[in-house]
Image 1: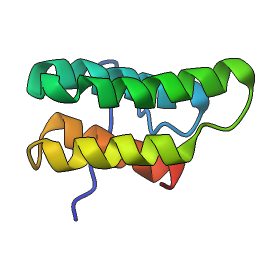
Image 2: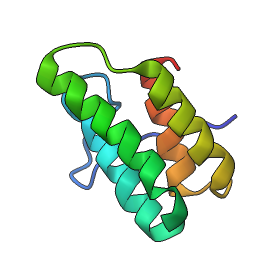
Image 3: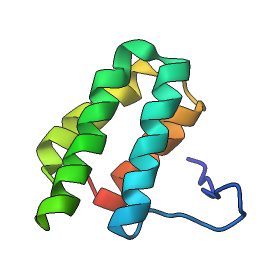
Length: 96
């Protein structure tokens, strides 16, 4: 499996290792889903919303809900597409 180097437009790496970076990855996932696979936007919003709630409450994210949503997205998007790359990166960081 290939490893992708996630870089933002400013050239800095955003590996999602902190909550703010992880939330940015989830936001990017929702944006990409709107373009690549609109039918899966609700699953992307589940990921984003769970991470947002966790950040606001200072509690761990619901990994079960996130894993279920990521799996649904992963099976529904094209291999090698931007959505799949983001799904893999979020899954890697959260270890789900």
